[in-house]
Image (cartoon, rainbow, N blue to C red; front, side, top):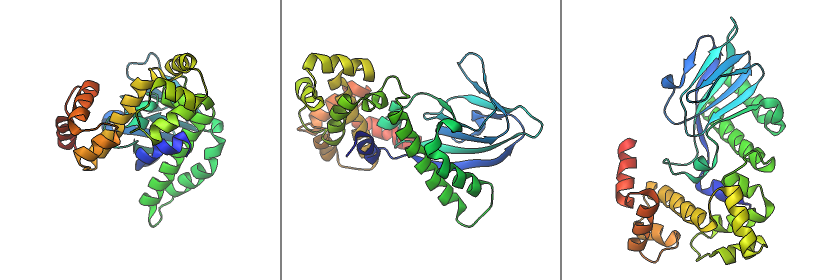
Length: 277
């Protein structure tokens, strides 16, 4: 299994449309459902303003705008005729510790002409979104989810992300090591054994991993284990099974590692997530 597929097993994208049509007045993320946001500009011109980012961006061609973790922003139509948009709530796994969500940059703004592999899905998506039909909402949700997977493939294949996990799996050598961490995270990996999987010397592997992914190999492994454990806890899996799946011999050892990584015990973390729902 390739590393992206292994990742998607644990953090499959989900999407739900909340707007499709002509936007003729300013729109703010304060008015959107909580979570990540995806905007697809079909036609027209719109000004994108992100909070905390200097300046603004005028979009005058079909464009994909993604805020994987949500981010305060505004969309301001720039013509009297407004602009045609499809907007959706998106998530990349449950909870804020989803490994895929954390791997993505804070925002992505890509002209659709740069995403030719998405064209067939976009064509059907726009057709469905702008023409009322039976079974429309669930079909649009599935199309949006396929669109997000194709987008992730594009980010990996084109090396769009300069640092982080997606940048790591864009590198053929590092991808081998990341893949075994994703698929066999419960094994007692060391930097040396991971370097052998990558076909590199220990020193070169450690340096390149730090450079491309932004953290040390074993630090990433611990982060991956805990991110996956969070997903399992949210599905109600017993603590002992979660601990074993993360490579720990007991729930006590797992709990200590979890608290070191996230600053709170697994039980308290889970309770906070459940109260936030």
